[in-house]
Image (cartoon, rainbow, N blue to C red; front, side, top):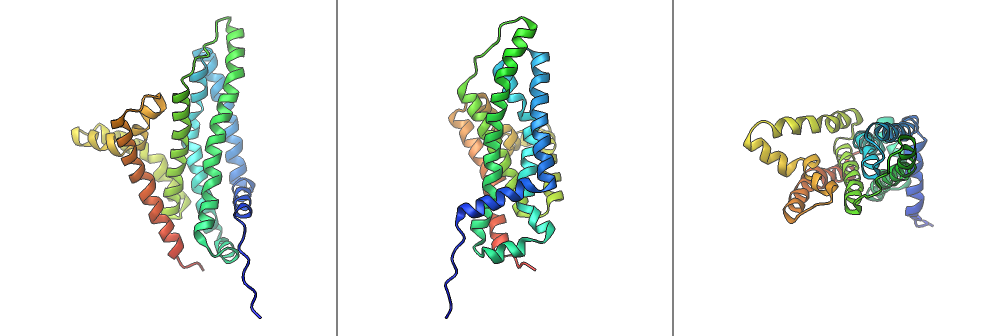
Length: 247
């Protein structure tokens, strides 16, 4: 008598993929570097720029914009590199559920990282104000902080989409890190390049979002860049993984 296969609960998949992301040597190193970089950048910025909460909190975004997408790329490419994906898909044949479980931990990490940066910035602001004997500036635009956090999530989603499309960590990381430089060159190449960068460069279209001053036109440009940089490659990547023969 054939017994029906009991589906793996999604929470178990999510727990397993979260453990895979942070239990690996690269994941542990990346997490340690993120924490150290956050602390160092906020403290360093506080000593040089003064006790301003909004400035100190968003300073961590410099490192986040580079390292968090790499963490996302590693989460969706790691098993293909180590050839353990066959075991994963054998235990859970519904590949879309596996992909969702792989994508959620890096996205949640981006949110947690933003909260961590704010929590670090608050005491640093107070200490710097006391050390420098100047008043602390606690005014922070909630919309700007929210936009900054959302931008972090979008940047990680871009890394996930690229990693899933290529299924090759080195290639995806190189393209992800080189993209801002290439878009900057495109934007300075003339009117056409400036127009393309204005509409398709995620780094440019998220600027108003991080400033907390997103207008209707800004939202349209942001939506177009998200479609090009995240939605389309993610959809193509999911289709590729679902149909890819695993050996």
